[in-house]
Every structure is written in structure tokens, then in C-alpha cells.
Length: 323
Image 1: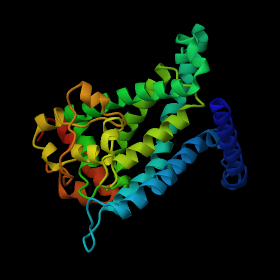
Image 2 (image 1 turned 135 degrees about the vertical axis):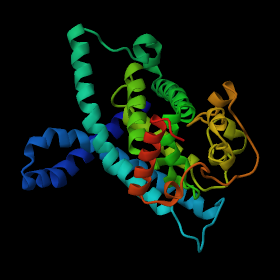
Image 3 (image 1 turned 90 degrees about the horizontal axis):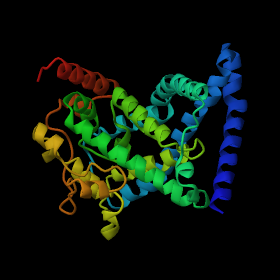
Image 4 (image 1 turned 180 degrees about the vertical axis):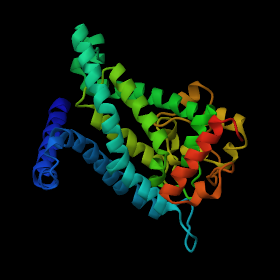
């Protein structure tokens, strides 16, 4: 039944993609004289459609919650949330999908060609554990667990290594955190994260048909974890990352020096079990203010371009060994 549902969703997705391509993108390419990009544009459309789907689902879930039970209200204050909205739209619909496509497509093609030349068929969980073929939902959940474990360590590394923190601090600079803040990342940081996630997915053999759904689930949950919502999920908050759990990670007192960043708390993206196992979990407590004391005002309240430039400067200063 689950397989049939997944198949129906896949067919609907392809039908929508073909319709948009034929009715909108193809005429645009023809008018611009870019028909040699037809095949590439058709493949890239997956990135944009998936991004649009995650935005719509995130808004539908998170916006009503933020309006009903917010942690903070900023009425009458100058808001920097608009910058995060720009980040989300560019990230999920524009610049990042385009960069990811341009960067990942040649690598994916080369990798597939290499495996074909070597006669290697990449393993999947179903080939390693054949009984999983009869349990598609269990297989999907196992992929989520493995990818989430990888994401936990990527997040810890972002805080531990100075050059990576210089980029990641763009994300932590926001003092008015909302569900839009999830996409507030430096472009280089986003590209590294994209390679990390896709690389792990390839290594464990995530089927191409499941990859978009995996990404959708994890990105919507990440948006919810950043939401300006007074919500901790109760006992269930020890199973899935809640807005309160992740807000504690963004607390101002977690940036009191390198030690605090390296040995901070609540790094999990989806499952708090990793923080529990590795001693980085902190449950309960108040809903703290968020931000990053070590960053400049531009990093906190600047435009998309301003925060990107400031993040790049901080990154270069770190590489040069300057404070």
C-alpha cells in the first residue's frame, strides 16, 4: 500500500514537472535561444519544484503556530526577518539549487560512468538486508536515521572548526529567529552541506525516487525547529527535535568563545538521540534570546548581500589567522 502511494506521488510529481516545463520553461528557452540547455533545464526543474514544495509546506505548518504561540513579538521594532525570507526564496528556488545543479550534475555523471566502467552496482539497504524489500516504510525510516546521524556530525563540525564557524555564524547571527531562519546560511556553507548530504545519500544507496521525499521531510522539520514558537512537544520532544530544543542551541550564551561553540548543546537536526548518546543534549529550561555576540551588526541585521559579504570576510580572516 505504501509502495502504491509512493508510486502515485511519483507519477503526479513527474506529470507536474512535465506540464511546467512544456508550458513555461520550454517557451522561455526557445524565445531566448537557449534550446541547447533543454535537457539540463528539465533536470534542474526538480530542484526548483522540490524547493517550492518545502516552502509551501513549511509556511502552512509554521506560520499559524508563530501567530498563535510566539516566543517573542517584535511589534514596532525594526525587523530583520525579511532578510531570512530572501534567503529562503533564493535558497530553495534560485541561487542554491542552480549552484547545486551545476556543481553536482557533472560529479554525478562522472561517478555513474566510473561505476559502470568498473561493473560496480552501488549497494542499497535493500540489497544488504533483502527482507527490507517487504518493508518500504522501515527502509525509508532507516535512511532518515542514517542521514540524520551524518547531519548531526556535520553540524558539530560547523561549530568546532574555526573556518567553518565563520561561515555558519551567518546562520547564528539572527536575533529574531523564525522558521525562515533555517535557510539563513552562507552560500559556501550551503554548498558544503549539499555535498555532504548528497554524498552520504549516494554512499548508502538512497534510491533516486526516495531522495526528494527524504529532503522534503528533513527540511520541513528543520524549518519547524527554528520557528518562533513556544512549543517543546512534551515527552515526544525527546524523540523529535522541537522548536524549544533547537532554540536552546541558538541561545546567546552558547557563543562565549571557541569552547562553547565546540562543546555546545542540541546539535541534532531531527533526532535528539544523537545529542543524548554523545552528551550534548540539554532539555528543559527557558526560551532564551538568540544571536551571536561575536559577530558584527552587519552579520545580524544586514541584507542578504551584506551578510554574505561579511560572512566571506570573516571566513577569509579566519583562514589568515586573524581574530
